[in-house]
Image 1: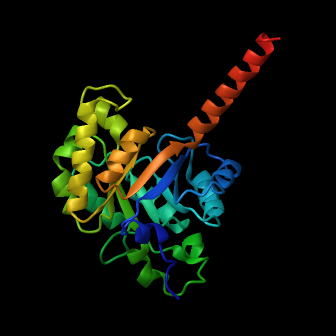
Image 2: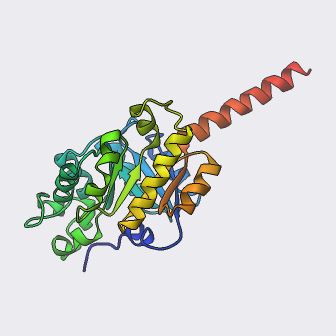
Image 3: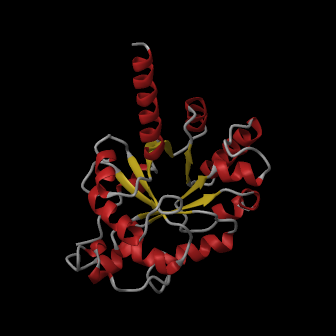
Amino acid sequence: MPAPKNRFKAAIQGDRPHMGCWVGLATQYAAEIVGTAGFDWLLIDGEHAPNDLRSISDQVGILQASDSDVVVRLPNGDADLIKQVLDAGVQTLLIPMVDSAEQARDLVRAVRYPPHGIRGVGYALGRASRFAAIPDYLTTADQEICLLIQVESRKGIEALDEILAVEGIDGVFIGPADLSVDLGYAPTADAPEIHAIVLDALDRIHTAGKASGILTLDWDFIAKCIAHNASFVAVGIDVLTLANGLRALAADAKEAADAR
């Protein structure tokens, strides 16, 4: 029996954009709620949300039972942490702050077993092999791992073509907020110059035969990204959806009280 089919990896190779949402509330219960919403994919954020290995693993276990594909963003490209989350059953990783082809090649090696990589062989202890219930896991796991890298700096954009030439990179996610700050613009990333750089990057990624990704809450820009062949698009963040919804509700409640 082989490793489980990676639905996300298969989906981003198609023509229809895969539409998703950020999961940053860092609890199983909240993740379970988001998992009922109907998004194509959900990203558990280990970079900016207060997640650790155990909370990521708990949320992965919950969301794998949903209809949404699961992606995990780690805080960095540390090979030891990559090994742990892969053993916990994660098949799609997003690694932030990639600025060079050398970094990209190191990440490819980190997600693959020897002789093509450096991933440690201890899958029998983890969810990835269904606790040793998948006898062919070692020989089939590599092909079902989806490695996404995040380009979000001037250096990364300048090295994008070299990064795209690295075999084993399945997709490139453009981080507009960090890119905007690095280039001297506002973190809102709504400057026309930033939009132009992002759309050009999406075109270059698509031309190279890789999947391209973006997170933006601007529906006009979402439409433009899709028109430029964005493969996986995040349109919301659970933290902001909850916070904004509660603020609006509180404002309505106070307005009703004041109208008395």
